[in-house]
Image (cartoon, rainbow, N blue to C red; front, side, top):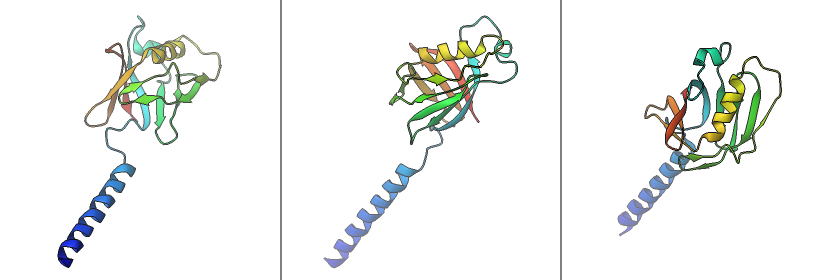
Length: 143
């Protein structure tokens, strides 16, 4: 009987330890970290024409529930609002610096973010796709 109690206790402690480790590690397909824009839908200007010098970036800090980045010219930040694979940038109260920017790549990027309502991450964790009404709006690569 003592052996059985010892085995059960050992199993419970092992499972508890595994669960604690599981919660603290980030999976390879986690949203957390920095992403670089590689595709944006909508504008009739080529991607390289919109972002000739610097591609927009987006960073997700899951622990502090913050989103921030650079829209090719200005820095922006806001609250990260997630529910499963749903994401809401409209309610995140984004703020951005207001430097004068050549072209309109920065405003195209910010307006497209507001249309995003969901996301998906590739199985290898290297690509982030953002959708609006189930249509691909933006694609990012993990930096």
